[in-house]
Image 1: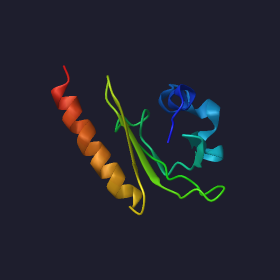
Image 2: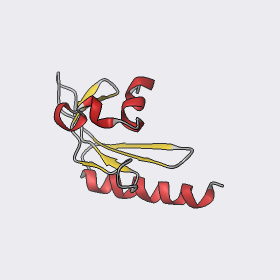
Image 3: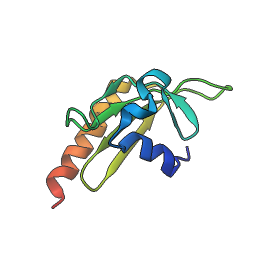
Image 4: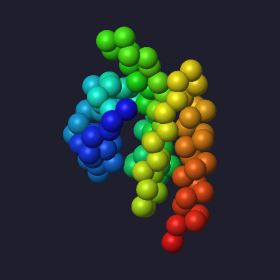
Length: 101
């Protein structure tokens, strides 16, 4: 999955509402996704769950996005519930937050 800088910019942008992400979804590596949970910026939990949609025979996957001040963590899994991916992603991010100065 090749993720473009523009796709990353939409996810971590300060004004996410202008992109209508919750209504229209967003693309992730060219694959359409729906946001289940978005606590990336507003809540300060720094997590986002977004499963991809099946288009053109491409298999769906669960994607979790978490971030620290210096790092954006993207985890993707197939045949795994998005909550499991989100939990792992949050654990990695927590470790990074405590180890980064």
